[in-house]
Image 1 (cartoon, rainbow, N blue to C red):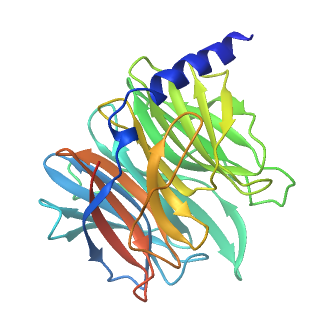
Image 2 (image 1 turned 180 degrees about the vertical axis):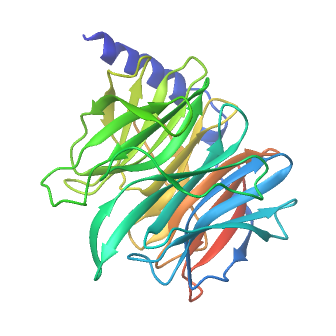
Length: 328
């Protein structure tokens, strides 16, 4: 048996066994709409920083094409929210913002930047913006390469990591995933190509305390089921397992007890934003959030013994930003 397979089996056993959350059902304590001022409000992320909540998302006229800007809103208690920033770039559609902390304790937002002409996608390149306190932001700066989409960045021990995917700027039978790293969030270098089939794209990375990198990957072809990957430093060799569900806008967290929770768009029997326990080999959405229609892209934060979830949905008419509190 290859050593990589041994590593996957050992770590999988550790993550599957003996965790309190994996034996309980999540309970939705509350949910409320926190923003609806934009014409189309979507693609959220969430962070708790310096005793404040920050939620980021895209405002535009519709789900795709053309005129997206990135709104940043903030709250002390998660109840009353105010706008603290709006990122825009002339002629560029900004979307899918992801917010996190850098190694020097600044807030950073990575986002896609797409160029359209007459409704057709011509090119794209990721952007990044920084803020020391969350109320003043740098102008979006291009990063990586033309055609890349660095969907989410995760910092670990002073280094930022993210997975860039190639499709669908050019029509291809297969899309590519490339694991990248950066010391400053601006200059990125490739670590390895991830051998994932089925038009892989949106990828969330998390880390075990021992440095093991974990990846939850959305796929658009074949079975379309998500893949889960594991790798040890220097993160150039990976082992992957196919999960049972297709997950749109995938996000997951490693919880204090060592278990994992994942959330995203569930497609069957109807489209909902849902969440449930995740292991290295299985995912089971067990709690539907009030949602429907155009929905998903949850932000996840574990805070005060609760799971806080930002997401967007259009079940009440126009798409709005929601915040849910969940007991695990």
